Length: 180
Image 1 (tube, rainbow, N blue to C red):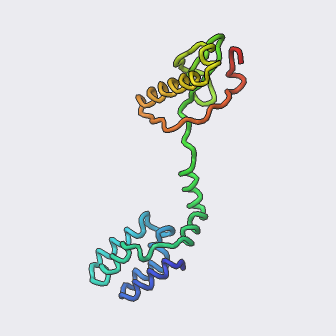
Image 2: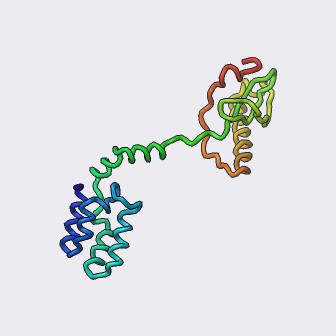
Image 3: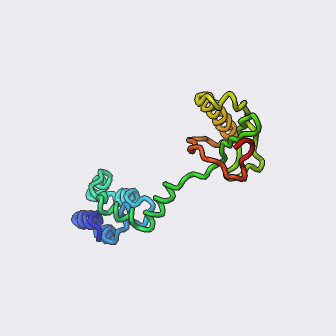
């Protein structure tokens, strides 16, 4: 029996709530391992339904967090299969909805909105003479920012919010053109 389950079970038993005490001992109301989606809320509701002075007193103690699981139980859950699965889902990178592709085409630096890993059906957003950006990093960055802003606006019109941009990467060899 986990420490928080034992503490809750003993407290319930001490006020005569034997059936709930047995369920608590079995871990039913454990905030990490309980069988309900919101075990503590479930218990609070059960105690409210009982409605006796003892049950309502226990209800308030549960609400106050007196029987919350400690860090050992938290770590146990985090290392469990369920914990690892949920952590993976939370940390999983959101799929890319497209990218800014920049290509040198003759004397031009051309910006496209393209799907990840392909230039098929890419949309040209703008172009600037290479001579204007080659020797001026600030202008180059301004052009890239303008193109990112254009993509963000296009996507927002489709209901997709752009939260951040990945760092630029070199495109695959088969996508390169021009003076590369």
